[in-house]
Image (tube, rainbow, N blue to C red; front, side, top):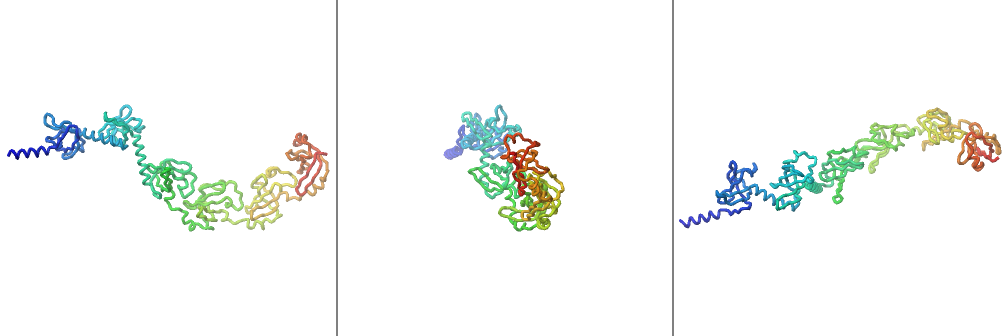
Amino acid sequence: MTEQKSELEELYIQSIKMVKEGEVVKGKIVSIKTKEVLVDVGFKSEGIVPITEFTAADLEVGKELDFFVESVEDDSGIIALSHYRAVRIQGWEKLVKGAKEGELVEGRPIKKVKGGFLVDVMGIEGFLPSSLSAFKGVPDKDIIYKPFNFKVVKVNNLRQSIILSRREAMQKEKQESKNKRWLDLKIGGIYPGTVKAITDFGAFVDLGGVDGLLHITDMSWSKISHPSEAVALGDKIEVMVLNLDKEANKVSLGLKQRLPDPWQDIENKFKAGDKVKGKVVNILPYGIFVELEKGIEGLVHVSEVSWTKRINNLNEMFAMGDMVETQVLSVDKESRRISLSLKELEQNPWLDAESKFPSGTKVSGKIRGFTDYGVFVELDSNLEGMVHVSDMSWTKRIGHPQDVLKKGQKIDVIVISVDTQNRRIVLGLKQLQPNPWPEIAVKYPLNTALEAEVVSVTDFGVFVKLDEDLEGLIYTSEIDKESISQLKPGDKIKVKVIKVDVEQAKIGLSAKI
């Protein structure tokens, strides 16, 4: 009997777990009291833990947790345990290990103090300096007791204290997000993004940690003059990745590539000779761009606007948004160009210009405009001819056409020539009168001496008035330099005729009599 009892005692002793003060052991909740929780750690007696050390989620009979052994047996023979200290010890070990490996830890700021915040991290109280918080401008209500990730930047093992940085944690999160995004990105893939900046050449789009460039040429199949016509700051858009260069940290994006290329079957849409309507979307000095459909524009060159009108400013004829009917001249799919014409829809008045205005015909017209070298006259059928300054008077030297004619003035002219190929009509004003130069040659034979009135002094000679609307030129070689410097318009001077050129309509004079 005694031997049997001894064996039972031995089995009992073996069943009792050896528990030492200062170690962390596993324990199971066996009873929950008002202020205490009884825990079985496999020792001969149960341990007691204050109920305040548990969270509501942990207070459950049968739940197994970690406990710190504060004392093996007190005066009542009960083992003293602490769940809080076990969590703190394990948390500290995990913190130290994570800090060495650069891992981020989650914590909750619990109090704002001088110079920063106190943060609870796995039961360990850490300090977050304001300079490392990245909480500038954030209300306290959005910080206190809210979960954030932090990086442990300093560990004090003796005091079991830590210094945290939210700023460095955010930088690491951003880099990790960027690295992950780079792995996700594939050429040809479509991804959501946010427009974060707009420049003259495109827009930068945030793809979630990685920025890509959406060039202006990849925004729309239609021509746009500025990226702001297609996107706005803050826009949420879906873009296609066109090219990736991780080493250079460059991502090329496309917006228009998400839609079918409208030029794909352009030959079936538009052919030479087709009459098409469109909207004026751009006006430039050399022509107007007409949108035929979304993404397809054609150019009406300034030379294709009118058969007859001289066009100096297209803005005076067209406005943005105007609807116009044109004729297709050519379609170049490779160069993505369509040439259009407005004048081809009208009858070409130059076809019968030569028969309508034969050389030598006297016609009437209205002055439409001037140049330094002549005047433009509007004739019938909206055709326009030009009177060169040399064909305005047989005898008078005309400095500028506006000296003798006015815009809108109706005049008679003689048709000198018609060039239908180059679309030019040369007109003459002086030809309305007989050529007086044969008579002038008779009236002013060589060596004729007379007194003339100075009209103007130039570098190559002095122009003088010989008769009404008749001038002659005193060559610089035929007058003293000193005399030239003293002359002024209106002065009288004695001259001699030394040359009469009927063909060139000129009289040469000398002041050396």
